[in-house]
Image (cartoon, rainbow, N blue to C red; front, side):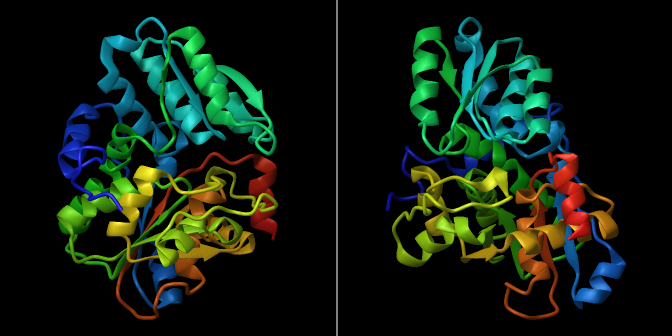
Length: 330
């Protein structure tokens, strides 16, 4: 495993630089809680709703940090990204604000709301079949032909550093209310959010355990942490958590997560739906299935039992109405 302080991996200084770069561009999302939910669960549950971030997810942070750091080099060719939707919207919006063109390679089964919102930001969309085509190869070919820069969804130091600003805010907000949680749980797909946040928290709250949360059939990070090597998911795996369906952890993200995480948790689709209902009924928040898995892991008892406070990140809220209605009625 690479040392976490080697040049190939981001360090805490990269996150502090991202904090400065993103000032006035990203929303400082709050920490919220429901007294009634706390009472039912027998512990204080704090949530950070990145579903309230620009474009409806944390992805705007990393995309903006990457594009701003690239500066004038992308003024002509613009950027290319590949994403099931949240990173697509984040890149499209960040490119819009930077005044540069963007093309997004999106799976043909991406939620309609994510495709529509990506297009609304002015990005061009090229569809692909996630089960038969290689999105990275397709994006690289397009970027080469256009002279564009690729903005990876997670395995990139600048993207990770941008997502790490979530961890900085968590640490500052917990300190402001005088709460030290027994765990912080974040959703995990490719690992950009949790690796960046864990890097920030390891410097600001070094004794607070950080856990990843994944769909049960896409628990590649949890299995990778247990085995010490990157694991892949079955080609037959399926989940409603479309934002978290990466086939294997990133190289950079796993190097960080292996060094920094206390463990990996996983939840079923039904448990993710239950967390979506709880977020809506108790916190008045609309959360997509993948964005709800961290809260789901707490509500379903995947953490060690106790009455100490816990904190969960709700990573996104871009959900089609039918999917959301199904979760409320499940």
